[in-house]
Amino acid sequence: MSLPSLLLVDDSDAILALERAILSGHYTIHTASNGREALDKVGRLQPAAMLLDLSMPEMDGDEVLQRMKADPVLAGIPVIIISSEKSRAEACMGLGAEAFLAKPFRADELLQTVGDALASARRRMRTGSLLVLRLTVGDLEFAVPLDAVREVLLQPQTRPMPTGPAYLRDYVELRGAPVCVLDVAQRLGTAHKVPLVERMLVVIQVDGVALALAVDTVRDPEEYAAADIDRRETVGGADHGLLREGLIGMLRVGGRNQPILDPKVFIARGLLRELPTLLAPVEVERSA
Image (cartoon, rainbow, N blue to C red):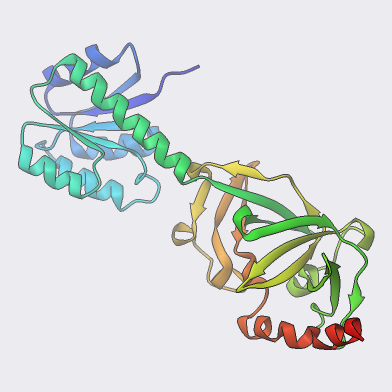
């Protein structure tokens, strides 16, 4: 298994040589001698962490840090400030640096600081992970967060409702209560690819109201790390259709991008409030 890579950035050859000597047995080492070179290399190499000096020619470390934090691709790479300038280093901590180690440093201090920074970054990545269900409807594929789902079941026999939009005309009995079935294919203007008896219901609860989403297939729940997800704010072209309101992010899976949608987006809040009214005739019939 390959070692994690580090990018060491300092305009002092002596400091770079010292850092390399201490760290090379534990990490794959790359170096840069100024800020511009550092920005070029960090984008290409995507190291596990960067060790960054502050006072350098061409571009100071402060600016390198700010540019990295402003770039969604680089913002998650932990930056360890290695400097004798305590006040500037503390300011960098406020800008998002992971750690600060003052020069001169001992070998054990450097190893400990780097190890702690990488462990902290790994904890953040786990915290930012997301459990999802991947669904298909016709030719469309998307995922929904697992915490939005109450249960998944093979679609039982449905019964017609007296009224409602075309995609919301049926209900099912779940544990003695009627639950509206929203046909996601009709809602999205596509066609199912599996027969009715093989379709799945994904039951969600929105504002206290249960709703069953009818889809073609449901994969087993999977957990994806934050690194596998492009959050909504970093995704371009997400300003139309359901993506306008419901897009949480894009999941990178199997070499393709798959939208992660908040399942509440399939029903307007106004219609959601009307569901008890739509089911009222059903309740009357059941209690008769």
